[in-house]
Each structure stands twice: as C-alpha cells, then as structure tokens.
Amino acid sequence: MNMDELKAMMSSDSKVDDTILDQESTKIPQLHNKYLNLLHEERLRYKKLEADHKTLYRHKWEYYTGKLDKEELDKLGWEPFQKKILRGDVNIYLDSDSEITTSTARMSYSSAKLQLIEDYMKSINNRNWNIRNAIEWRKFLHGS
Image: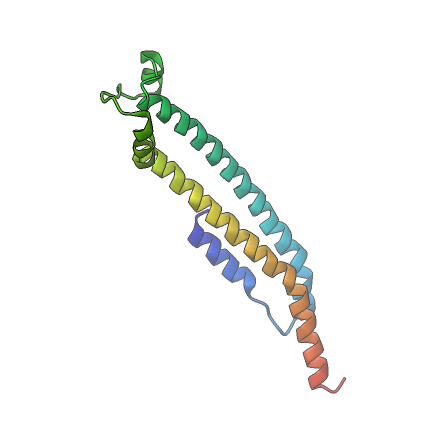
C-alpha cells in the first residue's frame, strides 16, 4: 500500500458519525487492531529494507575498494570498477551510488509510513476521550 492509499484509508476511517457515538466507540478496538497490524507489517518491511541496505552497502564498499573477486562480481552482475580511489574518497562514491540512494529512499519512505501509522494510532487512542467529551457536551446542552 502506498502513502496516498494509506492516507485515503485513514481519512475514511477518521470520520465519526456524531449521531451514533455509542456505535462509533465500539469501532475503536477494530480500528486499533487494523492499524496495529499495518504498523507491524510496515515495521517488518522496514527491517527487511534496512538489512538489504546494509548488505548492499557492504557489497558496494567492497566493489569500490577493489575487494570483490570475479565470481562475486559476476554473481552481482557488476563490471569491475576500473578506477583506483583513495580510501578517504570511498564514501563519496558510496553516497552517490544510484543503488544505494534508491535503497536509502525506500527506507525513508517506509520510515515516513511508519511515522504516519504511529501518529494515526495515537489519534485512535484519543478517540474514546473525544467521544466521551462529545457525550458530556450533549448532556450539558440538554441540562443533564
């Protein structure tokens, strides 16, 4: 699920019908469970992306420092790196490598989704208080 689909789903789930507050309050555990499952799935996805990124980073470091042999290069589908670079300059190549920047962008995207889901879960946790507050306000308006 991409970020736009997630936002649309959250927008739909955020609607509270104030004429049936009792039913809305019973939906809270279901919503909590729904987003808790999404949160766990995204955390697992992020951990996988993180592990893949670390492996890629190590392979690229070995590539740029000339430590990969012909077998490993063939396995990864990479051509030998022809330049000799100083150890201090390896990070410049790593930071600008397209595969590493793509991997980093995927991790950032997943991290943003995690943050969005966590923030929405906080909103769900506050929904009980909001519903109770609305009920109390109605009681006040009707003189109870």
